[in-house]
Image 1 (cartoon, rainbow, N blue to C red):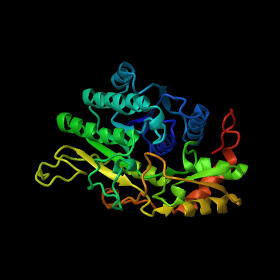
Image 2: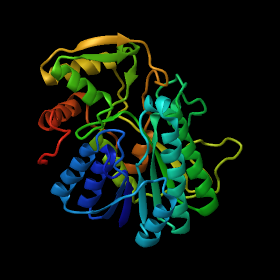
Image 3: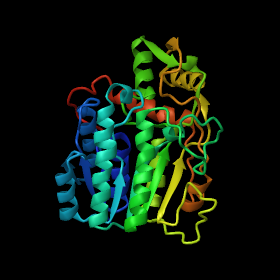
Image 4: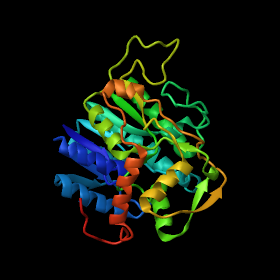
Length: 345
């Protein structure tokens, strides 16, 4: 099929493009290569994908540019949209909130309008485990209410789920929202803990461990995320005319709309995570223990039985194995990531 992947030069996006190309799909990528982090890493990801699976079309377009997004849908007519582009980062949303309105709300509206006027067989879009916000009961279930976000980033992701539902109901767009849980692996974002921790340990610099390292995260290896997406591409949701309005299921609808968690389902304390990273790097960390950051969720753990039932797959890469693969990539790529270099598979 012809698949539009937004955020194609991003961490999850690049891995997703690679997998879809290998599966034989025609992939059209979209990315704006913004400066939230060094765009060189994004360009290197694209070269890596092309080196592994061959060339693909990649347009430099900003999601908030409504005329450009409209023209892209008119010209390309994708059958499936995998919408992964967004302004990421919980902490950055405290510093630059308007970036989240432009990309995550206006940008997503432009994608929905494209899918409305040029109907697609399936819209898959990225949500986040951060939508669970103030919820304390774990594991988090897609059947839980998520009405208390702790950051603007989380609020925009919850808004995306609601926006997608309204367009599914009004215009019949089959849409699947995916709540990702702490994705990590090779080619990850430099603002996330794996690269930040690995750099600090390697350079003998202090690393910041918030909430004194007491909170837990449900780490999910990138290959498990991509496997789930690849299987879902050809499984668009159907409308459920018998959906119970008296006792509504938050994860499904009378419209062709649904939600899934994608998580490793084995939460790990940050202190344990750090010990594993020290093992793979062969160095001890210098740790600065700090209070919980505003906007951060205490603990995360995914309940993902619905995803396993729908796809026949559930995440399987253990954290120790995944960190080993990540550190092997990190040693190969850094510290020369900020200047042009030959990229190896």
